[in-house]
Length: 416
Image (cartoon, rainbow, N blue to C red; front, side, top):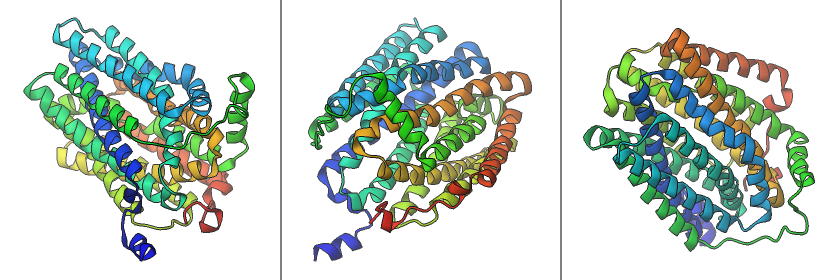
C-alpha cells in the first residue's frame, strides 16, 4: 500500500516533514531576498539615474564571492552545516535592518549600499554551500529529483511574488519598508532551520582547514567532465545573457511603467521557472540530460534577444517568461546531476566552486551590462548579450561531445 501511495503522489518529497519545514522557511526568506534585490536596484537608479551605478551592484556582490566562496565551501564540509547556516542568516538579517534604518533616516547613499551588499554577499558565501550541502540529506535518495524540482519551484514562486510585492510596496509606501520585510523573512528561515534535524557527518578525519583541502575540491571538479563543462557553460551564458540589472532602465525609460511595472518585469521569469519546476517535478526520470541542458540554454538566449527588442510590456513579459523557463530547466537538471555524483564530504567545496561560476557569471555580466548600456543603451545591450549566449552555447555543444551526449540514468542512481 505504501509503495502504491508513493507512486501516486505527484510530490513524494513533501511526505518528509524535515523537507517541508526547510522548504517553507526557504520560501519566505527567498521572497524577502528577491524583494530586497528590486529595492536596491530601484534605489540606486533613483539616487544616480545612471546605469553604470547599477553595474557596480555586480562588483559589490562578486568581490566577496571571489574572496570567500572557496573558504565557505570548506567550512561547510568541516563544520556543523546547520549552525553555519544560522549564523550567516543572522548576519544577513542585521544587514537588512541597517538598510532599513539608513533609508528611513535619509542617510543612505550608493556607497553605503555597496558596502552593505559586500557584507551580505560575504555571508552568502558561507550560507549557500551550507544550504546546498544540507539539502541532499533532507530526503531519501529516490525522492531527490522531486525535491530539487520542488525547491526550484519554491524559489521561482518566491521570485514571482517577491518582486511584484516589492514594486507595489515601493510605489505605495517606501523602499525602506521592503528592507524591513526582508529582515523579518530571514527570521522565518532561521526558525525553520532550528526545527529541522539532519544527519551530522563527522568529516574531521578527512577534511582539514588547509590548502590541500581546497585543492581536493578543485581537483574533483576538474576531473569530472560533466561538472566543469556545465559550470563553464553556466558562467558564459549568464555573463552574456544577464538582463536583470537593467530592469529599472526598461521600466523607467523604455517601457515607462514605473516601479509597479518594474516588479512585474522582475517577476516574469519566475512564471517560466514555476512551469519548469512543475513539469520536471512530475517526472520520475529524465533522459539525455546533456541535450536538455543545451537546448534550455539556447531558449534562454533566444528569449533574451526577444526581450531586448520589445517595446510593449505584455510582449516583454512573455519573453521574460521564456527566459525563466529555459534558465530553470537547465538549472534543475544541472543541479540534480551535480549533487548526485558528488560525495557528501566534498559537497560544500563543489557548491562553492559552482557558485563562482553560477553567480560570478551574472555578477560580472551585470558589470559588463552596466558599462555597455552607458555606451549603446539598455535594449541594444540585452540583444547583444542574447546573441552571445546562442553563439557560445552552440560552440560548446559542437566542441564538447561528452556534454552533448551526457546521460546519467537510473542505473547510475541519479534518480530511482
